[in-house]
Image (cartoon, rainbow, N blue to C red; front, side, top):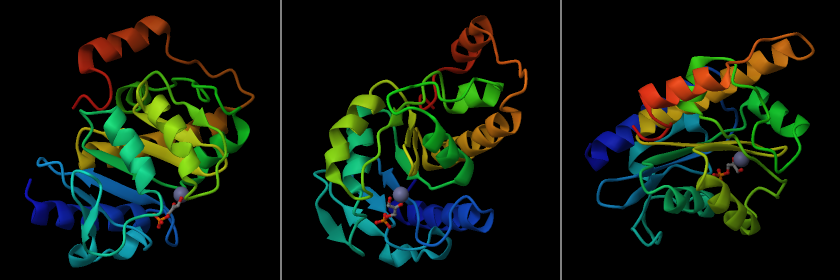
Length: 215
Ligand SMILES: O=C(CO)COP(=O)(O)O
Ligand SMILES: [Zn+2]
């Protein structure tokens, strides 16, 4: 995919996420790694009203070279993409249900919701680490995010929201949506005798479809 196509896709998918309520205001951010290692990241703006020509561009050393100033959380994108060489994108949202799970679960746990559906396993995987609370933009979280990303394609920042990676931008958006819907399902079923997938069923899914983010 060319840089121009990536810019257009960022605008299209940002608008789609915003129009369906996965993000509000200027919350959330996205980062895409181009095949040449350069990065595109719309930031400090509503994902619903992105301008392709203003999207921040950074070189492979994460130096800003064009477009608007990058996110105050570009270190978060860097932490994930350096931990996951096969990943091509990071999507961070404040999607309500995933954030609610991040307000309920203990920081440090890595299975805050059960694997209730196949697509949760296929898009999110076995582990969903909950990272302790940091102030948005606090680069002190970088090391913890990097460590968590080495074993998981997605995580939830406590009291803040999910950070999701994937092989392509589209895969990553799909995974972020699946995480939000899985969190909604988990909240709906709290206190009920919901049946989670078995370890064998989870193993089967990962064997047949591969781990999330492997593309
Ligand atoms: O969600 C956000 C911070 O956590 C959005 O911040 P930016 O607009 O600076 O990327
Ligand atoms: Zn945020």
